[in-house]
Image 1 (cartoon, rainbow, N blue to C red):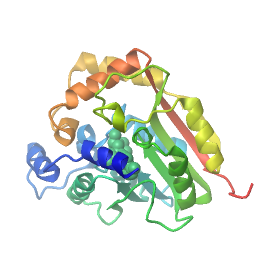
Image 2: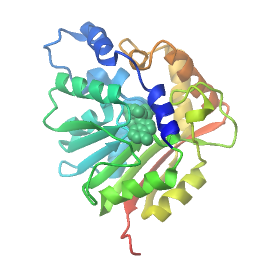
Image 3: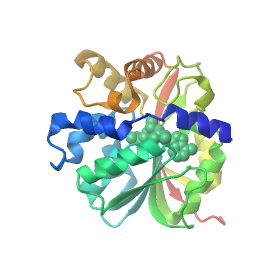
Amino acid sequence: MTDVLDGVRDHYRSPGLTERLKTALMALGPEDQRLTPGQLGALDQFHTRGLAATAELAKLAGITADTSVLDVGSGVGGPARFLAATYGCRVTGVDLSEPFVDAARYLTERTGQSGQVSFQTASALELPFDDGRFEAVLLQHVAMNISDRARLYREIRRVLKTGGRFATFDVVSNGGEPHYPVPWARTPGTSFLLTAAVTRETIEPAGFRALVWQDDSEAAKAWIVQLRASGPPPSPNLGVVMGPDFAQLSANLGRNLMEGRLGILTAVFEAASINT
Ligand SMILES: C[S@@+](CC[C@H](N)C(=O)[O-])C[C@H]1O[C@@H](n2cnc3c(N)ncnc32)[C@H](O)[C@@H]1O
């Protein structure tokens, strides 16, 4: 288990990330100038279809100003900042990667949201929160890095109130072997893809009832076609976060989706009473 987590940490270790972000963000204005979450969209939404996917998932999850939200595997914090800015809710993010958490805090200071959005370094398999602490949990493009899925979904259920929402947006296996490297794993050693059906079979016994179940593979493919036609997004983009090989990782994700080796799943669950 520790070996796997170390491998995942290594994949997202990104040395000097905050300093690199500071330099890259000079293109948007001086250090003391407040940025909007929207201005960071090309570098802080680390998943297929970027900001549009986060916006759709939040809507499906029924987030409001009163929802206390946990973003598991929060990356550099883009989804958390977007939710707080759009709905006025409080968001806590946890991530395994310390450099990502540092970067998330720095970017959140730059958007002036530190009073509403906070980040901690922690494993999704051992969330540092009391039972029933949150009304919604988001999990976007994280599960594919986690081998012990049953434990992941049990932990998410534990920190949710009964009746709360678990919204997940993840890459799933369609049965074919993916081409590596991909954005979440440079080798198969840190990639733990399940099919959509097995994902559901693993989530429901943890104490969840499905409310939304959507195959988003076609929308993801349309996004890939559009990206290929328009070229790389304007700088600063996710290449600053993941390093010079990001273009190759991203191209392989596109190839895997277009060849039908991988798919994209959106699902929202209600946290059922544990005793039923
Ligand atoms: C592809 S990024 C997605 C980041 C963010 N959810 C987003 O959509 O912008 C995957 C993230 O999951 C985190 N992660 C992977 N395994 C984790 C674990 N066991 N516990 C916590 N975070 C984890 C990584 O460090 C990385 O930040």
